[in-house]
Every structure is written in C-alpha cells, then in structure tokens.
Image 1 (cartoon, each protein chain N blue to C red):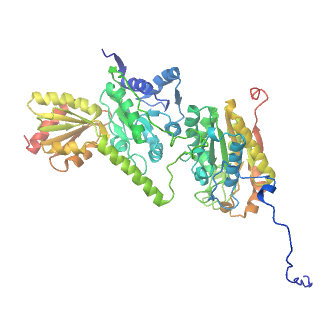
Image 2: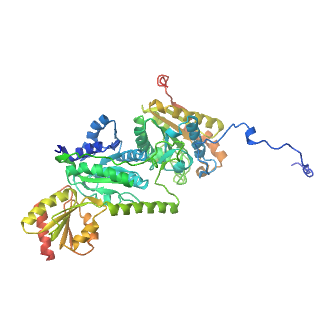
Image 3: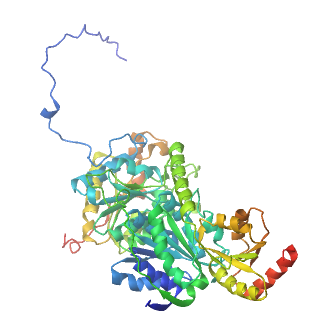
Length: 277
Length: 356
C-alpha cells in the first residue's frame, strides 16, 4: 500500500480558452443510419439484438434499398423489431417468418425480403418452415440470432443450448442423452441445394462486428441474383439470461460458444454463381 | 344467353378465384379438396399468378398472411383437419386485419375422421376457432354455382372489412358436378397503400403488419376497434334465403348440403299437407337471428337439420329465444339423412309437441 499522500491542488485557474468547435467544423466519421427509428430500445444492456438491428439498417442505407425492403419480425425478444427499423415490416407468428417471407417475396420478387429470427423461433417451432423455404431456394435473407436460450420468456433451454449449459428448464445443465445435442443450423441448412450463402458470425468484438456487417452486406447484395437463400447465423450475446456481465458474455462466446458453433463461412457462392453479378 | 359449364364444386371455386383476380394461392393436399390445388397448379401460371404447394397448412396460411400483408388478393383452401392446423394463422390474420379468403371443404371428424361430407366445423367456423376475440365472415354455399359466386363475394367482403372470410363448404358440394355460370365481375377499387408492406418510400411513414399490442390499454383499444367492425358486419352483411315461408306453420333451418336435402324433404312434407318452409342461412356469421325471431311469431316449431351432433341449432335457439320449440335432427360421420328420414322425424316431433 502506498503511503504517499495525494495533495489536491488549489482552485482550478480560469483559463481563457477559445470557444469550442461547432458541429460543422468536425468531420463526421460515424452516424446512426437514417433507416433506424430514433427511439430507446427495450433490449437489455450488452444484448446483441440492438447491434445487429443497426447493422442491417446500415446495409439498407448503404445499398439505398429502404423503398425496396420488407422485413419479417419473429416472436421472441426481437418481436418489436419494427419499432426500431424504419422500413415496412410484418410481424409473423412464432416460427412462421420464412413462410410469411415466402408469401411476400413470391409476389414481389424485386423487393429485398429478410427475416429476423431467434433460435427458438427458427430452430424449434419453425424449423420446418425454415428448411422448406431454404430448400425451395426462396430469394430471401434469413438473419438467425443464436444465443442458445429463449430470451423473451427469460432463459429456457433452446434447440441450440450448449451441452451442460444451465437454463431455467435445464437446471442441471443440458443433458444431451435426454434432449439431444444442439442443432447446428448453419451446417444443417447449408446441405440444401437452395442455400446460396451460409455463414456464421458473432458480434462480441469490433472485428466480429465488422465481419458480420460484411456478411449481411453480401447476403443482401446477393438477393437480386435470384440464386437462393442467404442464411446469416449470428452468435448473439445474452448477458441477462446467461447470468453474466456483458464483458463475461462476450468472453463466453469466444471461449465456449464457438466450440459448438465455429465461426466462418459455411457455403459461399462459387465464381460461376457470381458471373451475372 | 348465359354460358353454363359442367364442373365440380372445387373446380368452379378455383376457376372463380382466377376470375376474381386472386394473385396467389397457397395450399396443401387434403381430401376432399385437393382438386383446388391441382386445378390452380395447372391454371394459375397461365395467368402469371402465384400458386404454391406449401409444406403444411401451417405454412400455407402464413404464406397467405405474408401475401395479404403485402396488399395482394390471396387465398388458401383445405378440409377440416387442415383448417384446424390453420387456426393459429387465422387468429393472427384477424388480429392484424388482413383480407383473405379461406375455403373449408368440411369433412367429418373429429380427428382424422372420414373424407365424407360433414358440417361438424360449424362451431369452429363461426365461434372463433383460434385464440382471442375475433370473427370471420362465414359464407355457406349450397350449390356449385354458389361455390363460384361466393368466391367473388368473399374476396370483396374481405377487402371491405380487412378481415378473413371463410367459405364453408362440404365434401359433397365440393365433389359434385353441376352446371355453373361465371358471371361478369367488376372488382371494387380498394386502396391498400396506407397499410400494405410494399417497401417504404421517403414520402410516407413505415407500414407494419402486427397483431401485437403489449400494453393492455392499447390492446383493448384494438379489441374495441375489431368489435366495432364485427358490429358493422352484423348490421350490414346478414344473408339468407327463404323458401315457402309465407304460409309456413313449421320451419326447417339448414345451410349448405343440409339445406339441399331439406328442400326435397319440404316438398314431400307439403305433399302430405304439412306446411313447412325453409330458412337457409347464407352467412353463418353474421347469423340471421333477427329473421328467426320474426319467424318465431309465425311458425309453431323449427327443426334444425345438420350433418353434425347439433351445433347451429344453438344459434337458432338464440334467435328464437324460447318462443317456439326448436328441435334438431342430424347424421354424423359422413352419413347423410334421406329426405324421407327427415320428414318422418318431423312428423314425430309435430305429434310430440302437439303443435298440429
């Protein structure tokens, strides 16, 4: 322990500084996308949803496709996505986002249609709709938020819950001999010929966020090709239901989640596919 | 001169959908209505329309949700077990106020039941079916001609009220062949731009389709808005047909196929000197309670004839409100009563009630 005494200096002298810079004098290096609604979000601190919402809206802004984009929100934490994204959206029944998106896209093939779904929504109750939509090669983008728990209902076991992971419905940890192993959605769906681009990313670090942004940008850019479904699985932080701090949650993804859900591209379009592009 | 075609009820309904400008049909095979999907799979592409065989009825009703939410004229069809699967989607469609047409070619149940005609889905059709407070407008055709006519009417009512419309047919009307005339049809102009999700231009606020109102205050406001709509429907859209009611002492109340059988039973009874008439509700929701109440001051007894264990009879009793005896006769499990069987039952009832 230091015994050195810190003596506070006397009163701060009043300095005669020039006035602060006005806003115009600064160079704008970052701004919230204009395609976001300016409001307070309901998400918990450290949650991945708000960040991924923003990334999608950045893509919509950068591609200038606000007029051509229709989103489908799921049942789950992101059920209110249409309160935050300044685009036309439909709220689907639990698990049915891909069927709803099929109805939209088949009638408006020139629009950019995406679904935004959690693991309970997509991989449990809605896996049939998801699998068949991808098998048909629906020209939609599926943004799949995988945080290994049911968030909205406060932390029950999901189809993607890690082996041994404690949730409110697997209090002793997920027993794979009883409930089976977590479903690796991206790998499963990549097997379908209708899948055009399948990748798994995360948003737990600045680098990861940049890679996710790139993946989303690609997934949206591929839509006009009419070559099939793009699936972007994103490992999401859920500090509230993981009972962790946001920092611990980010670390948990690197140390535990990626063992079951390795990050990276799983299916990428070949050079032949990209010829028209 | 009118041009008649000889067609199955299911096919006439499918052809009418094309003529009514249906943009998209989503369906799943199930007896006794698979002809609809087959007919449209063949014919819709010729008109540059969308037809899709979905992976389930759950998917097809949600595809309808998506297409209707984007402002398109869309429909699905199925039979009883498939319609049960759609109930979740129908509740969402009603909650989100989306116009669409749903066709139920009713077979006998419960469970897998049988593929023969039935009217056991009456309660499911008119009392809700899915969760929450909502109603569908329910149209009950009794002929192949009406299978076609009610498609136009159904689509128009759906657009007018932004509400799902159910065409409740049955395995017999769907499968039998009759002459049908496709009448000229003018589609009313409906502006959907204020709510359809077609992509948000800079000039307007975003449109979003939802049935979620998490704050109870807002949910109640939405519920009250829906109730006001159902009140309008009850006031303006009641449809029924009356035969031989002016001099009637007794009244058959029957819809769809049962009404067809009752028409023959009425002829037999009248030959025997029993003055009986027929009230055939065309809309099962809204129901012709008012007219039944009026007729209750005229007739001595009513007999509801149904292909179920007695479902619509409850609505007849609501309308009559105890004024005269309301009886029920029905067959189940895909069995159909003969007109003679119905007349025999009628005679027994007249004796029992001493109302001759």
